[in-house]
Amino acid sequence: MKKFITTLKNIFAIEDLRIRILNTLGFIVIFRLGSFVVLPGIDPNQLKANTGGLFGLLDTFLGGAFSNASIFALGIMPYISASIVLQLLTIAVPYFQKMQKEGESGRKKINQITRVLTIVITLAQAVGFVATINSEAIAINTTLFTILSMIVLTSGTIFCMWLGERITDKGIGNGISMLIMIGIISRFPGALVAEFISNQAFVFLIELAILFFVVMSVVMLTQAVRRIPLQYAKQVGGSSLYSGQRQFIPMKVNAAGVMPIIFAQSLMFLPSMLASIWADTNETANYIGATFSDFTSWQYNLVFGLMILIFTYFYTAISVNPNQIADDLKRSGGFVPGIKPGKATSEYIDSILTRITLPGAIYLALVAIFPAIAMLFGVTREFSQFFGGTSLIIMVGVVLDTLQQIESYLLMKHYDGMMKSGKLRGRTENIAMVS
Image 1 (cartoon, rainbow, N blue to C red):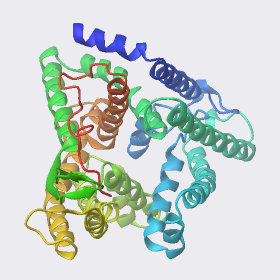
Image 2 (cartoon, rainbow, N blue to C red):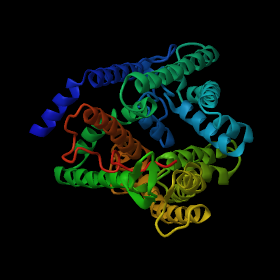
Image 3 (cartoon, helix red, strand yellow):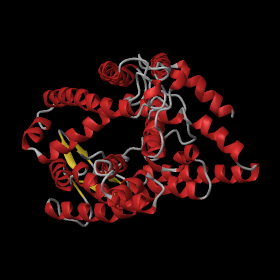
């Protein structure tokens, strides 16, 4: 406890870090306040937004803004969708591939396209969101309300984007990820209280113990790396001889992060949406719609898990390029002991990446469907969301990245770190970063 208090003192002793933390807290407060500002034209007393099934998952990411029908009801999610679309385009379309390779100017163009696409997606989603609001809560003309909501919701999403960028520039951590995490974690106290009320104390303690081990396992999954040893040849610089260095390439077991779950989650909305078109005339469509609207059904979780496995390999393949790593090593005079430089090194790295991705993908799929398993054992829907899935992985990832930044500030100012070793394991060690 004394070490923890000392660490807090060290954090706030650094002026730049203190200002960044306070800025981050200020932006978060603004974001949370906006989540309770109801859209114009709505009677809050009559508001009963549809937040069952998949809408409940979306509401979890938005910290209740969806069910409150607030001006931030769509939050940052349209921007996430637009970013995913642009990532896919940079793989499939040569024009975007060329743009990505243009350096800073290319990134600015892609960011601008992402913002425009975000507006388009928000306008489309705003119409769907209005359809989830019961008509009794709308106090003005429905057509006028729809038009106003499209404008206000789009403005709210753009403002959330701005807040995220300000957190990244003036605060601590990644702003977009931070807003998502805050939305998720804001539901935790209420879910915890509801779970305590609905269960006996002994059962509640068991659930907390299981939650602790699940969180620790997700931390292990996030941090786990397979180290490929490297050797650098001796080099002569002027009159000096530099001996070879032993380093390593950290190949993450879960190189894809949370993206496979986000990809799969986005596509899992499609069956129920398409089935609703023929729901009135086709019994099969009714069955599909009901099955894939219930995220606890075995059919939903089977398809969800398989899609996560596929997308994990897909996203790992596009985010880690063995050929580029091998070329970079060859140019810098590095090599894997016992492996020839060039193609042989690329094949060796690819084989290791393929082997470690499988257990990572399987465990990621298990984490994704664990909330549904928790519900089958009697855990309430709200509390079960924290037992796994996108919510838990996002929270763990954001917390670890934020701690890494704080740790870096402390180390730069020669303060003791937040752990006894002074380093966050797997994050700030002296490793060879090869991209």
